[in-house]
Length: 294
Image 1: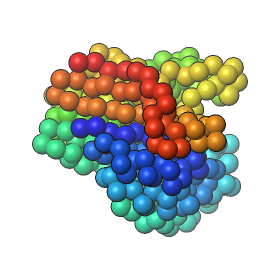
Image 2: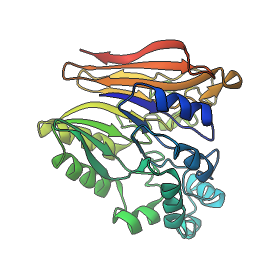
Image 3: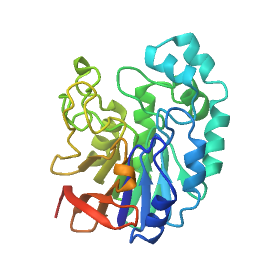
């Protein structure tokens, strides 16, 4: 299958993007979350509803939340975090309805064909230093910590086909602790590896149970360091799995003349990914290898 993978949109999506992906030769589109410019995801969700290519999406930490709630999560204000969760279910459902037929997942397993499955991981992921949006996740999914999240993801693996693609907002632990690593913490380098432990646990469980994790797709950690200006590595490969950080922010540059996404091809023989930029007319203006094997 060929996938178009779109990183953190943060408001940067218009009718030219929709037109391009409707005519592009992709079997499916995968969105790694953070549709909202800051906290209002519904305007972008409505634009995505015009897509005709099948698509899955995962909510990011900016989606379905309010500004006070997001600030409470960032600053770890427990009472405000709990209060902020009120209304989040309604906001997420509003976003989900607005983007249909794009399917919004979270702790979701979906077969893509007989031998390939998609797992949509923990929604609203924000980093491993604490379990963000705990009240909402506990109420909605019955999951209140990383251990419970890991168990749920492993259950999804167990009922999925042999080969897997994992769609997440933040990536897994284990891919490096430097600010330029795919999920290294650039805004607070002392945090080091900022990948999620529950996602890593699901990957390791898949391997020990005979599955092949072909690709892990995420974003969240933007493409350029907020402090040093250093560019982040897009891809990593541990010999078994291709990991991609798809977050190019802003994804539209030069007044629309450069529009970012990643092309991923998964075959029986291997996986290949390219970073693509297209212009306002939908013509490819640059392409660079993002990783792969086979």
